[in-house]
Image (cartoon, rainbow over all chains, first blue to last red):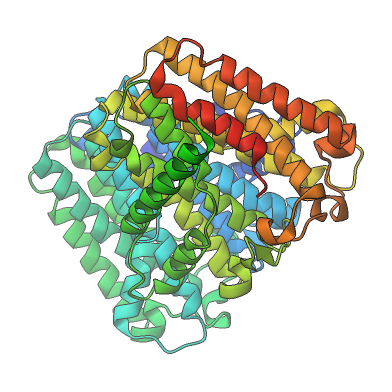
Amino acid sequence: MSKIHLKIYLEQQRKRVNEAIHRYLPRPEGPAAPVIEAMHYSIAAGGKRVRPILMMAGCQAVGGQPEKIMPAACAMECVHTYSLIHDDLPAMDNDDLRRGKPTCHKVFGEAMAILAGDGLLTLAFELMAHPDLSSAASHLRQVEATRVFAKAAGHAGMVGGQTADILNENTEITPETLNFIHSRKTGALIRASVEMGAILGGGTKKQIDALASYGEALGLCFQVIDDILDVVGDETKLGKPVGSDERNRKSTYPALFGIEEARRRAEELRDMAVTTLQDFGHEAEPLRALACYIVDRDR
Amino acid sequence: MSKIHLKIYLEQQRKRVNEAIHRYLPRPEGPAAPVIEAMHYSIAAGGKRVRPILMMAGCQAVGGQPEKIMPAACAMECVHTYSLIHDDLPAMDNDDLRRGKPTCHKVFGEAMAILAGDGLLTLAFELMAHPDLSSAASHLRQVEATRVFAKAAGHAGMVGGQTADILNENTEITPETLNFIHSRKTGALIRASVEMGAILGGGTKKQIDALASYGEALGLCFQVIDDILDVVGDETKLGKPVGSDERNRKSTYPALFGIEEARRRAEELRDMAVTTLQDFGHEAEPLRALACYIVDRDR
């Protein structure tokens, strides 16, 4: 897939995800309207929709129909968005800006931001049990994908990674702890996205394992690039100030090993990801292109 | 079921839930151990385990095997506990004590308390997708129960109720808004507990609907009694100071209608709940007894 084709593909998929997610979000009405408005605000604040696009690409790679698993793709974006809302809270990273816009608690207050995160996390699992998804995959696969999802998002995955990240602020950390944080905080959901796509798309055990390995390598690669962009990125493209990791004394790959070594590591991880796709044919083209896109991105 | 039998039954079920929930909770080890400790702390802080017991009683009422649906019963207690942790946060109700012990954020700090709540909510859905539950119910019923659960816990249920409750502090509210808050904040999960038990226990559509109605009446009844106990209860039994609703200017049933009318309403709701069980036999005895227990409780 050429760069220009990938660009069109990403644009198209992003549009599909955006349309669907607003269809699955509740309308802001009744006495609880403000929390629903806060959920909409943070979902609408944008983002590249990388995780749902990866899920659909994982589904396509095993011969499934990506548009049919849309409830799960939207569920993944709900969990990603909830994690950003809670991470930005004053008691956590205390960020005022996210994607160039005021963070959820800056607009709606802390109580509504906590509840909006809770609401999005819960909505994600409502979507995983949605009848629309049951018509795409067997109930068995629906349950299996839900289990992979919850594990990746919970204490052994994203919640655990964020915990370790916060506890290790302002401390010198080992490469092992950095790897623990990276593989969980960002890596777990990215890995789960591709794996869930393969499960819901009807993949064989072997295919699911291969795509989980692809997702694992890609997730680490994604985080290394994130860290690099926080040092050398363009603030207007990123929508947030660069240098925040250094100011917050967050441990990052470039801080431990330097920019050049970090870049080399990211390219190595990209190559590992692409290699795991060797038994897949033409249907895995988007996954191959996405691995290159993630290393080359500037935001 | 006599009062003495109910007491033994409750004690037995509570013990079973406590044993199981500690088995399903992760061990606190590795770089994310503190968040897991916080999860354990709030789960161990006690509580009557009313919701999981109701779920198992709902399962029994339709002829299912209550001990087989333990992962779902524990999932319900995880969601209840997460909601208490987040409700107690400084940005929400700002409570220092819960069940006579310091609240989660008082012991572990705000960041860990937010993450412990997130971890418990996510663990709940991991448990709903647990293989142990698949061996008790079909995957179809597992998905259906998960959907009922997520709806009851989310923006249209508990999260919505908590939102309206917070937004209406210090305001005069209508009986309609009070009903909105009650039916969602406490009612939704109690209703869902019984309904999920019926779904997972293999109930017919008619049985599931009847038990959902039972749960609906019981949930409202439970909240009215909660409000009454906050006015006339015994602090040592409740494990928290009474009068907090009045201090926080929370709208309650007794505040709107007086204690006597509130008591009358609770008894009416109990009778409604028991009436919905008329087509059930001996297996629904625990549910009948539980309705009386909830009205008579002093903590």
